Image (cartoon, rainbow, N blue to C red):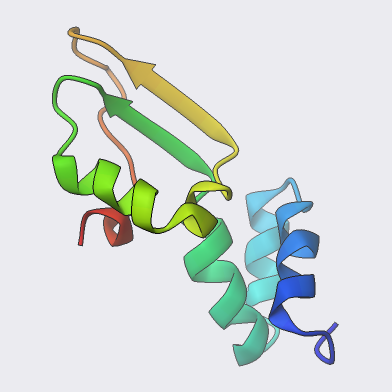
Length: 94
């Protein structure tokens, strides 16, 4: 796995369903950590309220489509409070 280029490791990481298993794989070495943590662990779940989402979030999705592909679950609320609150990776609003 370590001898594969990152573009081949990424789809393998994307196929791992369990966040705990993904974290364990990321903790085995720095090379896997650098691929898995920022691009897979932080991008499993997306939850936001359409009326409160910052424009920087949408801009981040547009300019970083590679990151947008990593989401597994998307929850969108519209004009009503969401009991879980907004959750999206901070890298998308930087």
